[in-house]
Amino acid sequence: MVQINLKSLGKLMSVIFLGTFLTLLSSGSPIAAPKGWPSRTTIGGGPMQGTYYVLAAGWSSLLNKKLKISSSVESTAGSSVNAKLLSGKKQDFGLVSSGVALQAYSGKGFAKGIKYTDLRLIVPGQMLPVQFWTPKSSGLKKLKDLTGKRVNFSRPGSAVDIFGQNLRRVTGLKPKQVTNVGHGQANRLMKDGLLDIASTVGSPPHPAVAAITSQDDFYVFGMGHGNLAKKMTVAFPQFVLATIPAGMYRGNPQAIPTIAELNWLAAGAHSPESLVYAVTKATFENKKALVASHKAWALMDAANVQHAKIPLHPGAVRYYKEKGIKLP
Image (spheres, rainbow, N blue to C red):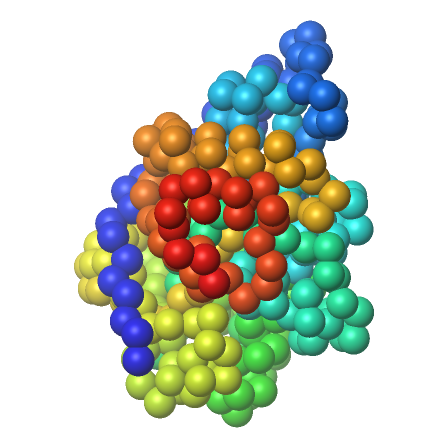
């Protein structure tokens, strides 16, 4: 069994600052794009309260600066929606998890028989650990505590929602009630006593978890490394055992054992090869700038490309071959 220990990721850069910065960038005069490139590119992020949006915002500002292309971030329900939009030529780039990418390409899981075969992977990004949080007054501290409780798995169709469905099916856990609302609303419901536990799959410190633990007494826990966690890693090989470092969230000094999957920067097959090559190259050559926007970028490692479960974009393949990096 593979076990990965996540590095300390530090504090988040303000989402508001990033959003404002992007607005300023996109409000200027249009910059002529190289021949064959779109005049404007779109990047699929996630909910405004989530890590995906922050990561996409930092990446977008880098592409605007280094490649002189006009890119904008779209707030979406997350990974599964991005996969559909990318394959359908309605987005140029986006963030997807490894599990969602595989389901989309193969027509399984959330895809329900529809194969999104124009989805392509570009850059392996951050590890996305499973995290749960609950008011300390609830007394809930481990995965088995979900049974009989009111649990939120984020928006319908999101990567977290898909994970929640798979978790209940594989482990046999039976919550009393399952809701599908955004993380911000889930935090309000827990503070009002209308919800017991919320869940996410994202790079720590996750904005929604960090926000609520900085204000109130909340307990954060993971999947653990026991039998239930191992059932999930067997059923879904994209997951591995992982540990969120101690002290990641206020009031939670303990290390958090859990499982995690890999996050990817992805593109549609329609994106020009030269553009994707330039994007891939700029992403790796400006890692420090990305880390400045969100510490989770520190976990980006080109060697992880060998874990790709669906095809890579030819533009990305060109970059990895030039660097002598092992391909899947």
